[in-house]
Image (tube, rainbow over all chains, first blue to last red; front, side, top):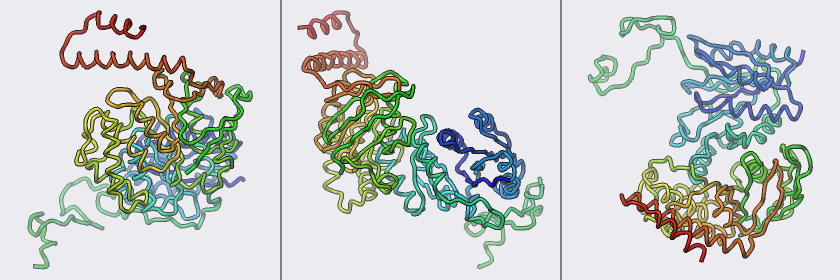
Length: 244
Length: 264
């Protein structure tokens, strides 16, 4: 069976990942490249219909109560098998991207970060490892901020991720998508990911609430429980006053 | 900085070769790009911006100084040959004008930007109807002030050789002076517009049709007169706008006066 090249696309919710991917996939279709898409979301998605609308085989994974990045990596091998069965050259995995504590990137696979110049312009750093570990950074919605701010934003991204290709794209008009398509084809070409490593550790999610605890209060909390720092005595806990 | 951009024609939407098969634009020239919605204006800009090499949907080829750009010129994200300015752009950073210009200068590798900032402020104030001050906060600037500052910044700090101007309204900014400033700095200015006055500010205009470059027209002497008349109309519309803002009433005579004055 065919082994598709895997491309992982991440970025903040509602930043425009699907729109920019749809334009880029259309460019790939013109080059005769067959793409399959796996869309990982938490609760619900309609993006599968948008992909299906351009004749792309698409499969949806809803992670429900589980962190979507965990869910993604647990299901990756099966997604690759599925895409191979669809005779795809490329498998684009579009992840939900929520807390930005971690990143879904895998060392051998091409990792793409889509970032909204409006929501992230002040502190691109807050997007975290999704941005800093990406091979390709796609800046969207730059058409409604000033040229000067675009240049400043680009330079900040360059500073925190010196090696990525940075592309500006427009999810509405499709401008920039030809460049994105070229990069998706040209950069990194890994098809066998079994044994490959995550670029960043997944979040430690082993507290009582991960296990279904519903009650609020310290006495119900077990496992890896991290409390915030408060000025001594102000948070009510005893832990932070131990020094005195 | 690039001196010439050459656009080698590709195909229109029906796959036929576009009527204009080669167009060379020199630095300091102003071209307007006109045509109905869907005629291919945005795609033309996009082809120029990504320095297409027969690998976009139109199959156009772009040459810089007569040559194909090398790989790094084409794909280095820090080399952008087109800077943009459009009516729906805003400043979004909560920062003082001077501080921001410093920051922008730094990003462009300009170490001592004080004199440059003085230049930007001076240009911005030549273009804007209301003064722009160094300690104004970017997000609190009016539309006219923002546009003026964006143009002054593009002319001075940004190093892109091509400036794309997409439908910039006349209100609050002197567009003629803006064009002259940019062209005077050796920029190639491309004006994408449906506004006849803005279209006539180009030395030449590219008429788009069905996805292809259909005609290149040079501004005629007759059109220079027409531009002058259109400016008169626009002036009167602005006067009318101001009267309404001031709480005054408009009379039909004001409009008749426009006609008489324009036709004489």
